[in-house]
Length: 292
Image (cartoon, rainbow, N blue to C red; front, side):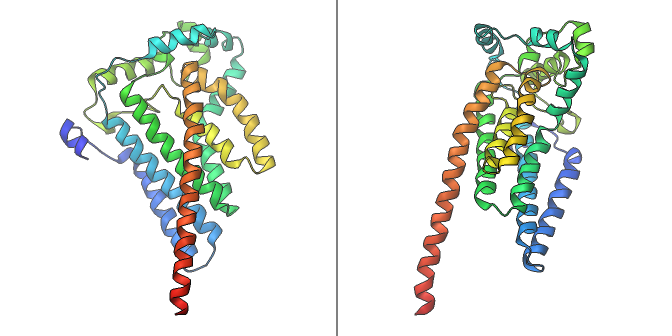
């Protein structure tokens, strides 16, 4: 809240009221099933969903409050690196415009990225797999913070903020993160915002791609389960081009998301294991005291 006060930004939670209300209901439901019904699977799942949703709201607001950014965007550099690998967002959009149905499918896949990770948390909670669930949630929190930190130091809005699509290609492909959306992101990087409730954005960060983080984090979390792993591999094969085309991302944004995911997964797993060792050591110390 200090950032909002210092920058004289109006913070209204109207757009987040449903998410906050849903999270509160999930916490109450989780406590009911833990304390009254003794149904730990439901309790674990409800608490996990609530905490993830509440963190998402806080992280989103924090990200917006960091506007404006005073460093120049690095998108031109990322576009130049992409060119070394033969990738160009306008060329990718021009190619997919020849297949409108495929473009529509990829748009739906991209839009369901958040649903994918929520489904994985739901599955792990109902499977009572604390190790995978807690590690995945910790890793996702770490990844979100790393992503915001990278963007704060080296702001970027993605390929869609650098390129302007041909109007006909834009009409056919209808990218979710379009050139017009990218231009608005560039404006906010310079001018900042004065009223959060007036902002309607699906994301601010180009590099590293957090959609890539969510996709890979889901896959790594569900990896021990064969059919879940197989299903998400198939989904993520489609999600990669969806992130590039409909997310308006550079290829380097995706690469950055992969690196962040791998590093934060290891960190999340270590944090969970450290927590488990601490719990076991506390239980060992308490047992002799109880006997004495």
